[in-house]
Amino acid sequence: MDWSRRNFLRRTGLAGAGAAVGGLSTMLDGCAIAQRYDVVIRGGRVIDGTGAAPVVADIAIEGDRIVQIGPVQGSSGNTIDASGKIVCPGFIDIHSHTDLSLLVDPRAESKIRQGVTTEVAGQDGSSLAPLTDARLRSLQDGYGRRYGVDIEWTDFSGLFDTLEQQGIGLNFISLAGQGTIRGYVVGYENVPASARQVDAMKDLVDQAMSEGAWGLSSGLEYTPGSFADEDEIAELGRVAAGYSGFYATHMRNEDDFLVEAVSEAISTARKAEIALQIAHFKASGGRNRDKVAVCFDMIEQAIGEGMDITLDRYPYIAYATTLQNLFPTQFRAGGAEAFVSRLQSPDVLPAMKRAAVDKVDMLGDWSAVMITSVGRAENQDYVGRRVSEIVARSGQDPFEFVRELLIAENGSVGMVGFGMSEEEITSVLTHPLVMVASDGGAAAVTGPLSETTPHPRFYGTFPRVLGKYSREEGLFDLPTAVHKMTGQPAMRLGLADRGRIDVGLVADLVVFDPETVIDRADFMNPHQYAQGIESVLVNGAVVIDRGEHTGALPGRVLRKQAGSA
Image 1: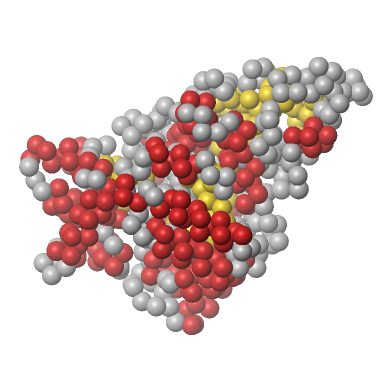
Image 2: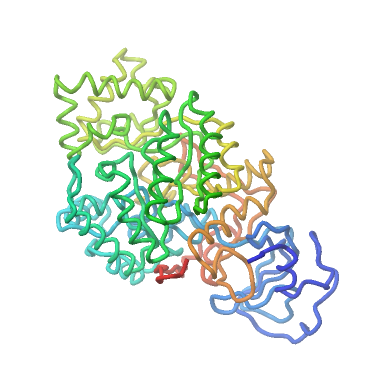
């Protein structure tokens, strides 16, 4: 379908009305009959999500739908003055980790205050269903007890029902995690799956898709998903493809073996005959920067051969993961206890040290590793500090510090790795196949979700692209930036009624100031809401009003219907 500016004007009735970028000079014929609407957004520069140039227009909303675009006559229960502002579709975070946090604070404040109206969770091979009894108890005893939330479901239907019954502030989509499914059937050891186990995993993917999951995700740098080869993953992907789902992969490597990882992702998707989404695409480490162009050439060749491939990326030079990720997956087999035991084994430790030090050398040095989360009170002083800084006073060997910290925390330590550069961001974000994603969850400046030190992408991803990379750096114009956050992810998902502004579509909308929109969160002080996001509507309801949360929870769980992509 051609979503050009000309078609936008024709469909909305602005064609022939003197519509042009910057203003409307003539009122539509037949629009003089006064009506009453639930919400009217007046005088904004409408960027419709297709990449088309902005058009000044009013938008009228009844219920959850846009019912008129143009000079709107009549009154409304709520009028939003958008003069001088941009009005665009709500942002769709195509790679999000907002899931359990919705049970703690359903407002999802750090996301909705960025303009995010739809979250796509269940990423990196890890989803909140299906759950074994053991996994359910682990979540109940860990996250559930820590935050005082009830976790009672074992399948996607139960998860979705729980969120709907509680109420959520934005829309929620989930993929089925290949790692979660492998752990359910095969366990956490580095062993091949039997034919019977593959069939059992396929049955679980089929169940997940029938209950409304949108596709399959993998996290091939994490256990146990990393223990599957591409043929095993392709078998699961074929099932998701039967429901018009897609395959989102955190690839097996994002640094020295990036080219090989992209090749594997393409091969897996080709075997499964499924659309491919490469998650948070990056080339970590200065020595790997030239591989970006090589990978895009491979991807474009595959597309030319008939494949459907897109990518996403967050706009930061550092990634977030666990400190365990400094070590190859073979050392992490069997779970946290087995990993910690290996850290204390004289037979295994030398090989582990060589691998971890080589990973850090690829990043640069130990100043590239920042500790972001620990569990024990006596280690809280390390949070927000780089390993080089921590060991500077004591003179301790940095690897030995990391080893001791991982042992003390039973392997559960968060880290940020400063592995990318602004030049690398530019080469990725500007590519037309790449859309914007946060790779982050929801947090808040107060309450339980303020008690961690998250990556600033939790708070700033989308305003950062609009402010820093579009307005200040000029990497692309605003319509392109908005398209990468709205229409493009909607097309990947097959969301026909979201991601664009058009009559009859769902009123997920954002009003922002193009002159002031910017992120404020940084690595040392991440709990800071973005600025310049003035109003956010979810399913027609105003959730952010003049920069403040209204308390409304109009979000929905969006269950995929077979054949909807």
